[in-house]
Length: 209
Ligand SMILES: C[S@@+](CC[C@H](N)C(=O)[O-])C[C@H]1O[C@@H](n2cnc3c(N)ncnc32)[C@H](O)[C@@H]1O
Image (cartoon, rainbow, N blue to C red; front, side, top):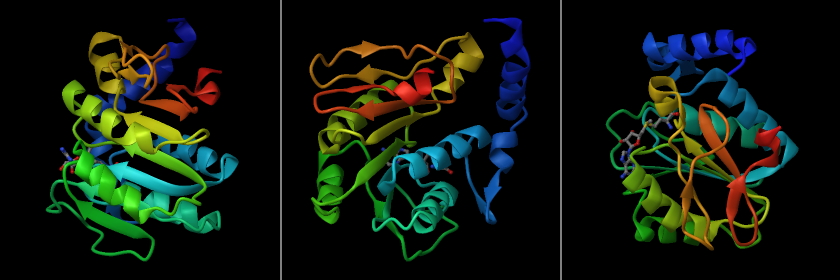
């Protein structure tokens, strides 16, 4: 890593190691996100005209609220579907653009329920995996959700930064439908972002620049 990257990495470490990430709010609701990721997501929503969002891992609901606001601002017709195994921490009881779903985000039945709620005529889908970050669960999620994705959709695997901070490398797996192989992403970032093509999920060109 060049010296130019060091201040950014220091900020990144401070944000996580000092627990700043636990004190973040969006419109008064707790949100567990790195601020520049939110900016990137906002850009993706407007550039790609994102229409629907599937989020695994609701927690307090701040990120679901943020995504719902982006859909609203961009005049999208779709909704946010946010999934969690429990609702104990939720600070958003209901919202006209959010469907909160209780269930295991790695279960094919959950993905099937969600598929049934989204019209086949949908536009771009933004899928964000932010539930249990352990490898086994992320692999279950990828197996369950990747079949719902189409060319031009986005798949975000959150918190691949944690291993980067602790061990200097990223941990998020890349699963291609064709090979079912796992390979590490190429760059440090707080989340791994992939664009979906017809047969595979691959690193986003936007992120690779
Ligand atoms: C990192 S938090 C989500 C943070 C939220 N997306 C945000 O940015 O504010 C992870 C959430 O995933 C949920 N979770 C853990 N395992 C899960 C599973 N198997 N299925 C669905 N949700 C799960 C936890 O209950 C927790 O609320």
